[in-house]
Length: 229
Image 1 (cartoon, helix red, strand yellow):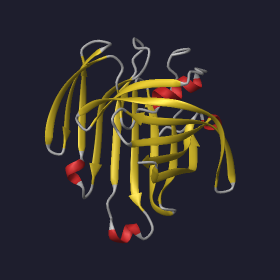
Image 2 (cartoon, one colour):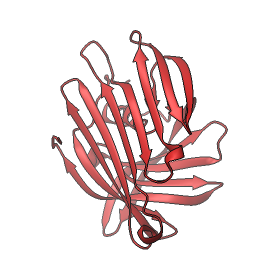
Image 3 (cartoon, rainbow, N blue to C red):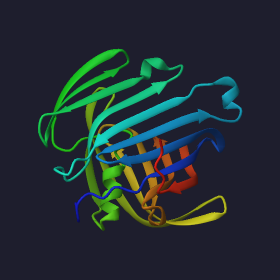
Image 4 (tube, rainbow, N blue to C red):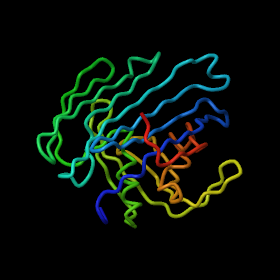
């Protein structure tokens, strides 16, 4: 880290979830730090015509701790719950033995997984937080690598800086820093536009597979500095 870890302020952000130029859902993300505990939640609700044929919601939650003895937050648990596609539900619990060593118990598709890891570790929901910290603290590197636990496995993700970019969402233009996120051995990748005016919160996310856009998310509303119950 350039100047230590910096967490963005508490906030709630609402995104439009789109596929093939059609809105299919709304995603609400909330980051809430109280004392040494950080709770990060995400709720996806189907919208428009898709809600009539696929009334499936998705709930995600991550709990992290950040005691004064640690230089950065560490993940304690992650849960993903799908209303209908329940076989893809996830539960991950992390038992830290010291500042670096962790035992992981994970459940995915009704199968249990036991993993061991040494070093920093993030989840699929929280993997943007260390990069946002790097940007907030002025790290101008072009490449960042993070280890992520997801679906019962450990994977390495690479964030590649593509440069500054102005993006227009509806009638508002945002000055952003654009990154490409990829995982070794996967044909999926993601472009994210981080906006300095919102503490480098993503204002637009585009997920691609085989060079074709799969889904995208665009920021609709942002409320900072609120403590949520």
